[in-house]
Image (tube, rainbow, N blue to C red):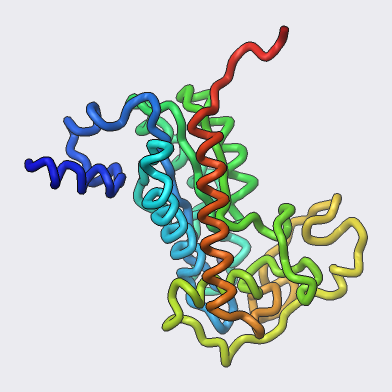
Amino acid sequence: MSGAASQGRKRGRRLEDLSGPEIAEQITESAVIVQPIGAVEQHGPHLPLSVDHVIAHESAAALVAEHGDAHDLWLLPTLSISKSNEHAWSAGTLWLSAQTLLAVLDDIGRSVAATAARRLVFLNGHGGNSALLNVACREVRLAHGLMTFLVHPFVPADQGGASPDSEMGMGIHGGHEETSVFMHLRPELVHLEKARRAVPERLAANRYVRFGGMASFGWLSNDFGPDGHIGDPTGANAREGKQLFETAVALLGEQMAEIAAWEFGNDQN
Ligand SMILES: [Zn+2]
C-alpha cells in the first residue's frame, strides 16, 4: 500500500476500514473509540423514522473528521436500532428491549476491550436511550475495565437540555431544534407542510412533574396526543439547524479533549 493510501485510511478513522493487523498498529492506548447510537422510530407526521439515526451518524462522522487527529478518535459503525419502546405503538418503529440493548452494549464493550484502546464513548442521538446508556457505562467499566463515557450532540430537553421558549421547555421529540437540524442534514426528507404544534402545555404549567422537572415520570409518545411528536416544529428552518449542528460538533470536540486526557487515580491526599 502506498503512503498516500495509508494516510487516507488514517484520515478516515473508521475502525471497520482497518485490516486486522492494522488494528494492532493504529488502535493504541490513546485511542478514543466512538460508538454512535441512533434510532429508527416515528417522529410525527413531518419527519421520517431515521431522524435519530441520521443525527447520531452525521454528528459522530463530523466529530471524528474534524477532531479525530487531535484526540485520536476512532469511529465505529452506527448502532441504528436501540431502545425506542416509547414509540412501540407506531408501526415501523424498530426497537430493542432494555435487556437486549444492554447485552449488545456489553458485547461491544468486550470487543473494544480486546484492542489496546481504553476509552469508549457512546455518542447518543436518541433521548430514550440515555438512562440505559448511563447504566451501560458502569456495567461495561466493571465487566471489561474500559473507561466509558456518554455524550449527546443534543442533550434532550427532559434531561437538562435546551428547548425554545415557544415550546415552554417541552420540545423533546421532533420539535423545533431537532426538525431544524434534520432540515440541514436531509432537507429532502422533511415535510414541513405537515408539521403541527404539539406542546403539552398542561405539563409545562407544573413545577415538578414536567419534562426536566425534579419529579420524573414514565411516558409513551402517544400519552400526549396521537401525533407522536412533542414540541413545535412549525418554525423549524435549515439555517438554524446548520448553526445548531456545527455548534454541537464543536462542543463534542471540546468534550473529547477532556475524555482523551481522562484518567482515574488516587484523588485523596
Ligand atoms: Zn429524535
